[in-house]
Image (cartoon, rainbow, N blue to C red; front, top):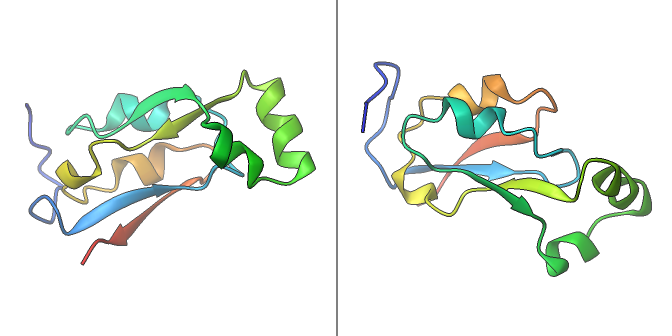
Length: 96
């Protein structure tokens, strides 16, 4: 796995957080992530149910796909996902 020179943290300190009310599953975050943190897939029913009517409609228009971070513990806080997301749906948060 290639390490990006902009990675600022060891894994397990910072993790990406995806705002499903903004995410449209365009996969820009997954493409740029050097640690393969993200996967793009159909939104889970429980996550879908927390959204408002407008966000649910927008998700249906965009194929019900969002970004999940199942390997968030591998994040090294390079921030590429944050800057790549056209919807500004990804933020980095401290895990500990």
